[in-house]
Image (cartoon, rainbow, N blue to C red; front, top):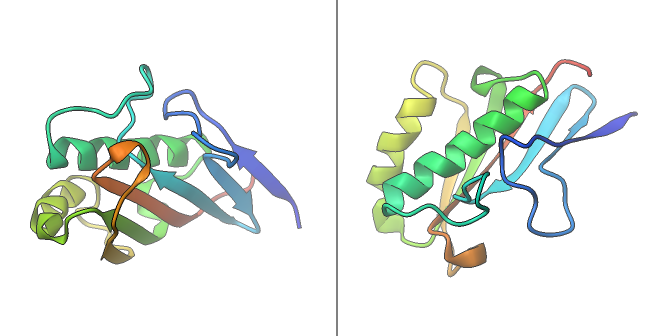
Length: 129
C-alpha cells in the first residue's frame, strides 16, 4: 500500500503535526479544515456563515490538489461550537454540495482550534497520483 501526503498553497498550511490530506488505496482523507484564510493564516471574519464557507473552500482546494473534487466525496464530518448554527451551515453547505450529497455527521463541540466556530473534514475517492 502506498501512502501519499497532499499539500497545496491554495489552502492553509497545517497548524500542527499533520498533513492537509493523505491518499491511500484510492481514497483521500482530508484533515479538518477550519476557516483560515490561506494567504494570511488568520480566521476569516464575517460570522458563522463566512467561516463555514471558508472551511468548505479550503476542503475543496485540497481535493482539487489531489485530482479529486467535491463530487468524489463520500463522507463529511462537521464540528460546530453551536448546534443552533445547523440551519446556517446547511445553507452554505448546499453551495458546495447541491446535486451530490455525501454521507454526513454534524456534532457540537466545546471548542475548536484558534477559536473557530466550524471545522470540516472528509473522505473522498481519488484517482492515483
